[in-house]
Amino acid sequence: MPNTLRTTLLAALLLHLGAARACESPPPAVHDIDANSYYSDKNHSVIDPVRKARNVAATKPVDEFLEAVARRASAYQATPHKRDEAQCGLQWLSAWARQNALMGTMTTSQSYYTRKWALGGLALGYARLRPAAGEADRQAIDAWLKTVADATLVHADAYKGVRNNHYYWEGLAVAATGAVTGDARLLAWGRKVFDHAMSQVAPDGSLPLEMARAAKALHYHSFAAQPLVMLASILDVQSAQLDRLVRFTLQGVADPAAIEKAAGIAQERIGRTPGWKIVYDRHTGAPASPIAAGALWEPRVGGDIAIANPLEHVAK
Image (cartoon, rainbow, N blue to C red):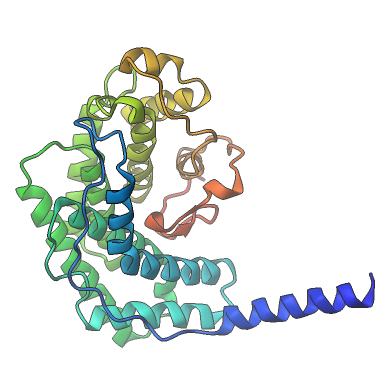
């Protein structure tokens, strides 16, 4: 290898390692969330780019916090000797916990959606970090996550609208919090959500409320399956209804003809096997599916899906 190339690669490696060791100060806690819906049609299938951009800007501080914690948590679980990764992630979580973040005003339904996605991802990321936490941080983070989970389930129980994919993500967020903190009450609420979801699965494996999303019906089947697959693993539940939903969705990914006929409209393609399939395979004991690397990162389920989360139940 030429000396100049070797020097360049070494410098890049040292820069990467230095960046991995560095821990920036936690950002100011977000209390209020002023998110907004960004669909322009009655089926919530056509995105208005201006409204979408506003929502992205409004939720950016929460999303960036979740991303950073997921990065640290995944790195620590992959390489447990790198305790600096764990301590940084815990420092960030503890800072927001001690400021009671995410417990301010939620101005819209989209604000509640943003909070529950953050809660689920942070609880699953914390599951990777918790073994490295000191007692004071554990108490602070546990208490905060349970506070946000309680607010999430209270809002969900009071909501009079449809129980679609958003309800399933709430179930995952609350159950993940219950599992990581040892709160059986929160786990039981998550099981209630899972059972409701399974009652909605049609004989062909479809979900009626997600079929109503016009050109995004396939997309929303996958989006609904993601929290349900992780929820089933956390609860250690095997379900024939979930199996049907997974088959229906994956068949649609491979060939959307059937779902297009049922929905009455061409579908937006997904293009690759969803990352959540690896969680399903681990829990059911099915042969692992080849998953593109780009599909294996999802902060809303704790970061790196390729590494089994400590809350998952992996088939022996």
